[in-house]
Length: 166
Image (tube, rainbow, N blue to C red; front, side, top):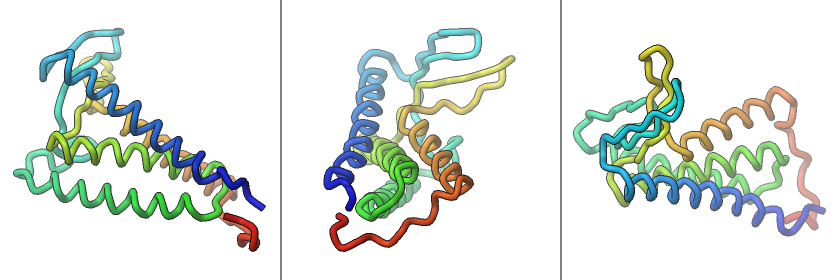
């Protein structure tokens, strides 16, 4: 029999990612002007940039339709991830789904409310900058890595749920 609080635990991980992501984006938005940059280390800056596209600014200059396209994809993925978390899955998979769900909802909220995603983490080396990103992006990437790890470690197969499982 599975833990009856299992689903709530994983949904709360997703909600925590969403809340931290939105708190950080709101802080950056309220305390720094657009285009702002502050050197933190020789390889890392805090910045305030807007990304109308997807990862690595994919389709950023597409004219506006991409806002709704990426919003629909994020909401569809979020529904699927919430459904997956309702099923019996192993812990590493549940963690992965939770991280991706929280990140997807964080960026979806930005697209719906602001029209673009706020990015503020800027890593660079010798003048070459990695595209700026945010906590939601980190959660999505971490979740994807966890899914790959679960697959490589053989955690992909789940035994069928017994009658008492929820």
